[in-house]
Length: 287
Image (cartoon, rainbow, N blue to C red):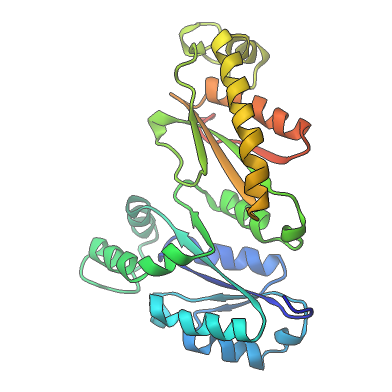
């Protein structure tokens, strides 16, 4: 990228997937954010803006309100490349079930108004399919609350991200609450002995020493950890070499209270000991 040219981040995706929240976070991170801009105006706005002559980053939010279609993003991206700017696309997604629930809670109409709400969501997903397939970043917000989404955007897009090592998030969860949608690697540890069946351990979690010892001081766990860390030692440097800035690893047990929590904590300690920046999150520990 040429010096003194800004990063241009195009934010798009499904309506209800969190674009407004992401726009606010990007503003807090120092981006100059323009909302609801027609795609054919993107390159011209960048040219006319004084942002072009600074190191400040620009985020442009485009969606079906502005008539965005897959082919309508090709030309502005090509124009930005011609201006020797680093342009990338962030696509925000969520499951149909989650989108329906969010619209029901907010009582807002879908911008497409294609018959029923289900039909509008289906139509929008069809219109944006090619953009999603070719986006530089795809974040599924189905399992995120507002605070978790803010954290994810801060981790991915804060200043200096490209100079920082890859950030690893290890996320424990319970399969009975559904697997997380936004993970790169997933491990199922339901084969390990379950502390749930020990009366004195049932009310505790994998963060408690007694549960941790029960889970980790087991021949199968020892073998699993050895094989898993061996695999990660192979994969992580290769992900880094490919320029991946964020790696999410899911560890699942039945309820997300005991085994997955203990394993996630142990993996977090292993990553930290190896000098890898790691964040450990327990999705279902309070459920």
